[in-house]
Structure formats: structure tokens, C-alpha cells
Image (cartoon, rainbow, N blue to C red; front, side, top):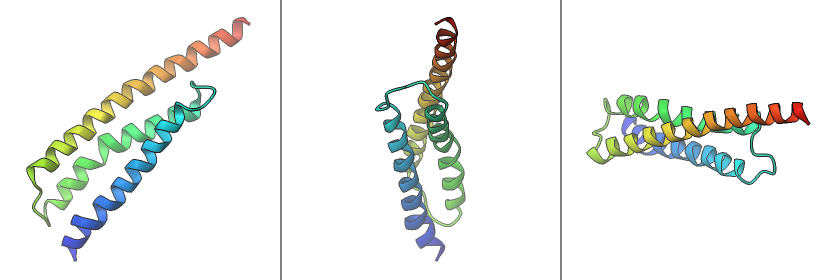
Length: 106
């Protein structure tokens, strides 16, 4: 039972969650107003899920199933993606600050 859960169900659910969060990130760039708190919220949720979910889940699953070496590379890719989106969310926070300052002067 743990083999089925750890090998099929958990990765399927986590990648469904990943693609849902990724769709929200891509939707951020199609909005008319780019620098909003809601957009930063989507970016933060995406980078936090990429930084903090893959490694603990894989580590837990390694107790029940053998993890191939390619999976550790995939976790590294998720970690790097999380760092890149973290920097992007910080840029968006700076954009919100600049946008608010600009609105005060007009």
C-alpha cells in the first residue's frame, strides 16, 4: 500500500498542485496591473511550495520506496526554480513600493 501511495499517488497530487501554482504564476503576467499584492501572493505560494515540499516528501518516501538518482536532480531543479521565483517576488515587492510612491506624487 505504501508503495502505491509513495510511487504514484503522492507524485501525481504534488505535480497537479505544482501545475496549478504554475498556472497562477503565468496568469500573473497576463494581468493589466502587474505589481499587486495578489500577484506577489501567487509568486510566494509557488516559491514556497518548490522550496519546502519536494525534499521532505521525497525523503519520507525514501523509507518506503527506492528513489532513483534522477529524482534528486529533479528536486534540485525545483529548488533552483523556487529561488528564481523568490527573487522575482522580491522584485515585485519593490515594484509595489515604487508604484505606491508614484501614486503619491501624482
